[in-house]
Amino acid sequence: MGRFSNSVMRALARAADMFTPGAWDFYTYTHPDGTTETIEREPAANAYYSNAFRACLLAKARPLAALPIHVYERRDGVRLETTHRFSKRLATLLRTRWNPFMTASEGVRWVMMTKDVRGEAFCRVEFDGSGMPVAIWPLAGKPDVEVANGRAAFRYQGDKFTKAGVYLQDEIVWVKSPVLDSDCLHGVSLAILAANELNLSIDLEDFYQNVVNGDATFAGWLETDQKLQQQDVDNVKQQLSDGGGVVNAGKVRVFDKGLSYKTNGQSMVDMSLVEQERWILQQTCRTLSVPPQEVFDLSNATYSNIEQGAINFANKTLVPECKALEEAFSGILWAAGYASDYVQLDMNGLLRGSYKERMDGYRIAIYAGIYCPNDVLAKEDMPPYEGGQYHLRSTAYLAIDPETGEAVRQEPGPSMGGGNPGGSGEGERDDGHGDGTEDPDARGTALAVIHADMAERIRDRYESAGDTERFREFARKVLAPLSAAYEVDGIEYDMASDIEEIING
Image (cartoon, rainbow, N blue to C red; front, side, top):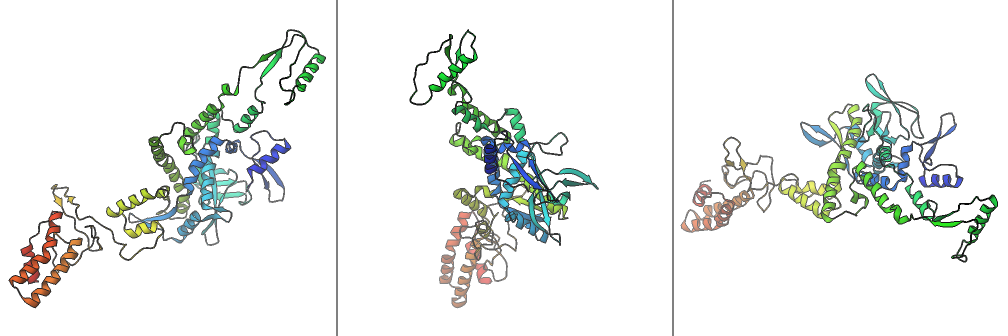
């Protein structure tokens, strides 16, 4: 497959002194007949040697590789965990390991970095005898795209883990860079675009090293109006070589033939190397849509723009990248006939580092009825508890009738249950009426549970003591807290009528 160590290959190239900068990235491929061939990678791969470009690539690839990946199916407009065996097998690969040598997070990082450097990334899906996906293999080379019977086909030259041959559309995952070529077929390398636009040095650090060693500039020169013979030139070289080292530092030299020393006015300060590198980094950030603070360029950073930059980075850079990955891997499911299934990356994983924001979001979602407590516990990998499966609803909310514009109290459905002492909860409960009728002002709220308990106590006293003034006083005393609660909630409540209804059953 052409796996290699950049550091080892680079060291060998320098030691042999036989490769020019930018040509060190290569791999050896063994043909089926046993012969080997050394294949040099495309020039775009040299972008990995640029600190600026590499930093921007990692800034995008690392957070995306940390996101949880799920495979869902949409049934009757509702998103559910997939029940198809094929989709479950693919979900396992995307969450755990692509193949025995690569984890899922490593695979996502490879895809993200490769598509921006080479313009597109290709992966092969391996299937077993029963047609189930068992592995995902990155392709070291670039296959030729053809059309066969109205479907895409990929002719590949082969590598260590993928045989040469033609592969069908459902076997290849194809992820392209945001920039497409004129035919709208292939992606364009962002590395090449950046290098052409910025005149970006692939091995910029070598240039800086030459400057520090004095190889890229010189302190001065000798000048004369006389003609020098070869012997004169040799004498000057000898004089200059004798003045090197600490012992000879400051030694006075006397040159003949009218030679005079001229000083070069250019210094390292004049070259503005730091400003040049910062400019290249900022332009590279623009190409890859990465805010400078994400690659630790804090020269223009403030507390407010760092926070806003992080939000823009997630919304305008990572979300489109997630969409591209989801569509590419969902194509495996669609090609296999599972049109209602799809792959989705959970963007909530980007907030896992902020505990307070996560907890505040859960609290809002629970009280809004979006999540139940057990949903939140599942997201935090914690066990559920009995009763945590119920959703909450605030009793203080009113719905507006779209026809009349009047406020209407919402009635919970028969399947809703549970409740909370704060006035939020769902589910029909017995409101204390023996005939099964309900108090329209208390139905489906936590107050209905309290009213049912009060009604039972009042009925027990009535059956044992009868309808006396003392009984009436007892009933009013029992219902007083409920009456106060109704008043706080703005609900009309007639205590006397309620007592009569409790007595008459």
